Image (tube, rainbow, N blue to C red; front, side):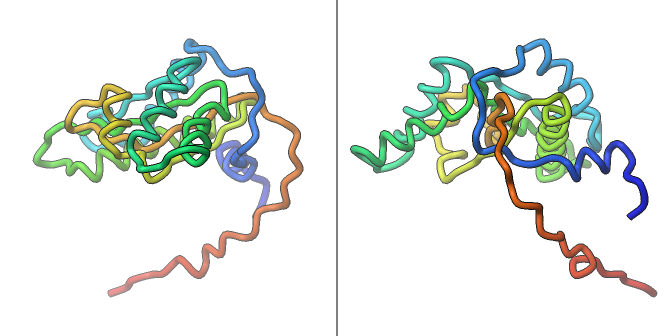
Length: 186
């Protein structure tokens, strides 16, 4: 490939960061980045998404909700409850579809996914470490209640955000795009 354009370079450079340091961007920075991330393709311009910042004790309440959505006890429950504490900031990404006969819910959810991915790229470009995490409990009732979701809203997961730590990672294997590309003619 010839010299990469800025968007392509950002996509190539982005890496999930499972280990994060204790610093995190402030709310004003998140809102500023969302102004850009929110420009993703969005049929009907519904902006069918919202983002909820979880800091401090809110991460502990999320851990409790994750456990409440399971039958885990003891050490297993404690390990699950501690997962939201792996980052100083969790950004819950929520699909918030509106009724529209021309724009299906799945299409609105896809727009919310686009915002989450764009936000992760922008955070990475701004120097923050990010990893998108989900799990079996992401759409459970205790987790939805903890986030205050409306009946039509669906949690897509959390962007765990913190300071980038130096962690040498092996290069990514090739995507194999040619094997996933086809053409229909006629």
